[in-house]
Length: 549
Image (cartoon, rainbow, N blue to C red; front, top):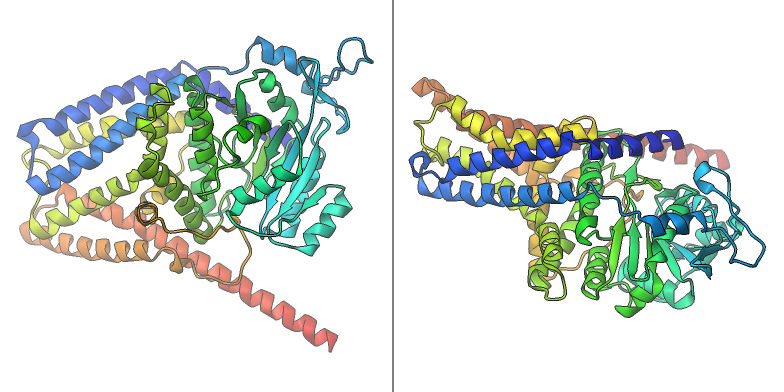
């Protein structure tokens, strides 16, 4: 994706977010939620006890998450840039008063040398840019290093190689960037960054993952915020330019919703958190909390939480300042979601923000919503069980006396408005996202179990190139769910033909079967493609070997 396309996407999101249509849709969604909740809690509509309790637990959780999300989204109509930010930005490349003046307007796309110093309050600042590396393709690392090296403003670029690759060491030397290899490799990415901090001295340091290509204006847009001496970090979006298959399309759109709606709103409550890349920190703030938190693979959100507890502030800006790659395979997506969900559950279980006296009430609620979000997996699981309970045991969560059209109207009053909000703010709606989100519930349940028993997980680059590894090794539960739902649909159809009546549960179960069938088909197509690529690679290697004989 070229620069004009990135800028266009950013501008479109900002225009939609500031549109008066957004609060209108949110208001309708809140009203719809109350209507649906009123319907659920009315005794005359209750069905059998077990499925009814399952519905209450699942739906009330979703509604509470929805309310907090709407509150956050409305908070997003707030610009974190104040007068001091703009004044600092205008003088970022200007020498102190009394010295030779250098003032370049980078916002007008005038190229600024990477050797021009930057100043805040007429004081020269130093900046380090860290590129953590661990098994990413060499061509991706090269693009990332070149882009980081060429960011406007004086800075030092470091590649932090945790994979001990001499090839990357040579690449760094050829590109004129620094190379750091630590002697031991404990604590994954956090340990890698903390070791680099012990070897560098920049006032500020940025982290850009090896699969992200930074915009040259990265420092120009972020550094001026540090005129606020209490600011700990500035986070920018994770933006992806790959959307070629089921996984990358669905995951890409999922991230757009989070970064355009949720993170922007968290600024209002000083609760925007770090996401591990495309972020710049104040070194002294990190030093004050003892370094990047290194006892979890989700070091980003843990570090953010501790910084906020120490009274520091954070800023999120929606400007796309680095473009990367979202997961392209079910293996990569599953591992990424498992890592993120496990980290969130770890905080929820071990350091629940709701009980942190060091946070404001707004921050507590924001972090609680974030760290409890992946309980959505349990809600999906409970709701998936409802149709089989009715089909096999004639247990229904709602009164069978209510007409289908009335149930559909009440049910959609909350969910349709949520989809409408996503459609409007993102300029479209991807079915792949809905399918992927629903089929991810086994990942989130597994993540909760990992956090509960404190099971450690290995770290892997998002789209690391390994030998063939069947996607079915990572989606077994989804396959089992598909088989179960398929059997249930067959039984349900047979039962409906026998009693000459189709129920809501049967329609719902068939729809769920379709969702998981689509997911399994995507896994099958991915497996075929991986086998084809592996076979082609093997033939190529064989021809080369024969040519050398």
